Figure (cartoon, rainbow, N blue to C red):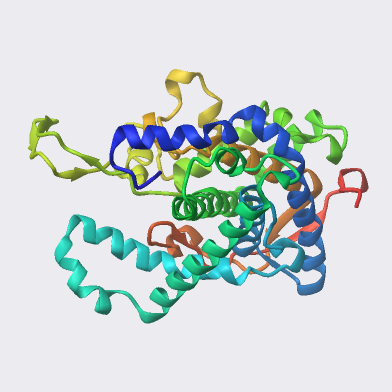
Length: 374
């Protein structure tokens, strides 16, 4: 659906999956999400004790890909349990460079003839293997049909035969990239900024301690009402948007800010430039969650999930994952850098999404009453 240019066809595709991403539908899936988060919480302490650190850039990916895999195919990748990325996820991430270059050929067709030199052979191989594996997972999910134990993202589409297998493969790839890697980027970056600003971690602890009497009492509905936790996530996405390039639009032939944009021209707004413009956010390069606790007129304008008809269909799922994950980890643990990553955000590299270097952290329990009862 993300690549559909026709507005009517795009709206029709969104409608097929809209019910699966509504707040009530996600409440029905919340136990699945908590299961994976709780497993990660236990792994963070185990890995900290065993290895002296946890690479949060990878651990966040384990979590979000396990969740979206479970919600899409009815089974996770088992990455959190094994503390190791699934080979298919690695293929997907390695293929992102290739898909970025291929997307550029739609705007500059001449680049098609240069693809063999622009895309490394390893990226093309990863892309082919990823597509093959995705077909197998989708085919298996179709075979399960309504015998699946719960309503996942594909249930309505399969039950009513709304899409072909090929179309479902395209949507599955979108769910995995947009529904996992983006949330993982925001969580990883939040951990970085929280360590860089110890007062932020302390304020998070204080808010969570007041809101919850135990780890087990943390729920999606409850964390959605926590002003400071939500401010931390909002400020993380403002400072370091998980998808910096804005979605493309095709000019009908109009003037924009006094400049004529010819018909058929692709235009977009760079999300990071928007978020960091000083007229939008004073001291834009400063990480300051407090700016989100002001009245609405003083808050920055941000669009990490885009806006309008093309707004990310998974925005409610992303918020649920990020809020509950950050709340449970911050309730249970203190954390610090195992090795100083320097200016970590500026070492990330962008294809369609961020390619993130390691972020080695060390987790320690806050107190017995804050621990997850395994």
